[in-house]
Amino acid sequence: MSNREGVTTNSKEWTMIPVSNLVHNQKVIEIDGHLSVEEACQVLVDNNISSAPVYTHGEKGHYIGMFDYGDVIAYILLVLHRKPGQTNSDDIVDPESFEIKDIVHRALQGQKVPVGMASDLSRKNPFYSVLKEATLLSAVEVFACGTHRVSVLNSEGDIAGILSQSTVVRYLFDNRKQFPEIDEILDKTIRQLNLGDEPVISVSASSNVLEALSLMSRNGISSVAVLRGGKYVIGNISLTDVRHVMKGYNHRLLWKTCLQFVSHIRTQQGIVDGQDRLPVFDVRKETSLGFTVAKLLATKAHRVWVVDENNQAIGVVSMTDVVRIFASIVGIQVQERRASVAVFMH
Image 1: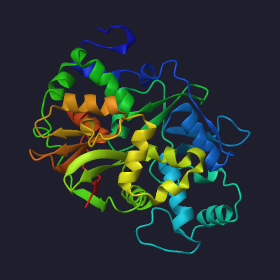
Image 2: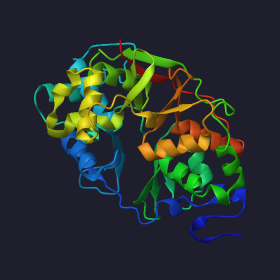
Image 3: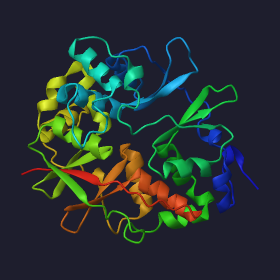
Image 4: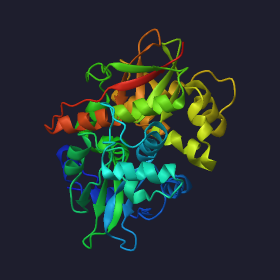
């Protein structure tokens, strides 16, 4: 027996809810692949979105891929850090490839680089699509592997909506009382669920923002914590914060320290000067999964930092971790985990 809006009274039935129920009446912003990377980034900024599908110029409906702030960062790093032919074992992209050489050549010559060339340059946001009849279970299976979003296609092959990890987590969280198994697992603690134990990779806060972005890009993660004295969480830098660099092409921010960058972001967000920590970004091992999810959703972050009794950062809980917990309810297990990154102040 089902209620309206796809909410069911049977805990097993959440897996069978059509994904179209979660993207109903969604306005989809698409990007013409002929636009420059800078122009495409402005589309993200203007519409307050973190990603958008890119279509072939003059052929709307023929999608090249997704474009997000991870690609913006990969583009910045490629142009500022590398010349054609330069090699590095840690590179995400192959600097010897024709496409990469072309992007660097165009950028160094001051020519326009079409966003179609930079779509999924980060190699972290491939274009995944599902039909609107697909179930929530199929989406959870994809998201449990670390994918952040999928495009929902209608019968004509057009994008009816973008379904993200956050959308699914919010839906299940908001309707937890309708799904007893979801409700039960949200009441368990981070410790009980064996979350927050991933090793924390660090970068000095005295390092410039460019180095921090490079580390994020190289490790395929969406945010870093800023710690005071190598221990205390005082802020957060995420992939989407690169929009502050792209606004007005404020590239000098890339050479600021991480601490200076966090202060700049707080000023931009209207946070009162002098506030030395943002507690919304951390949780403890004894924090419930439900409270952790509430923080993830309230901050629109993809990860929160786990601290010990001394407020020292010891791990992270990501949106992917939450999706994997939900997936485990129906027997889906994913082993791969990505490391977390913290920014240390010395």
